[in-house]
Image (cartoon, rainbow, N blue to C red):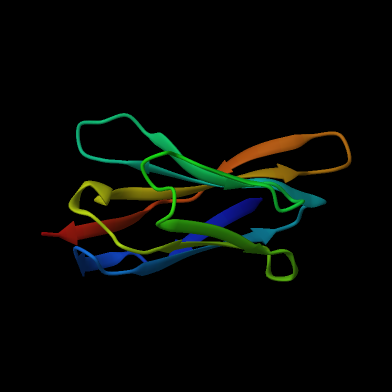
Length: 120
């Protein structure tokens, strides 16, 4: 089995920063793209950002210039540095990864989510 474990959520004032981490554990061949999604109360889950195993990144317009995704392949970990946080960033943040079980088969794996709350 493959698991993604997130950490780093919490309560922060507007304008503050948080850093989320997500580490993959278990037996697998590779980790392909890694992503962060978020879901606010009463809203659909949305893609915040992703990073490929080659380091290419993309961001939602709402977080460009404030959030930075990075990964440490040696640690099987992806990070989300969130700066200049706004109350509208409040959500449960989920890590997602494409886990290569072998050179051909990929499994879509989700973390359990971590709450981020930004107070005004």
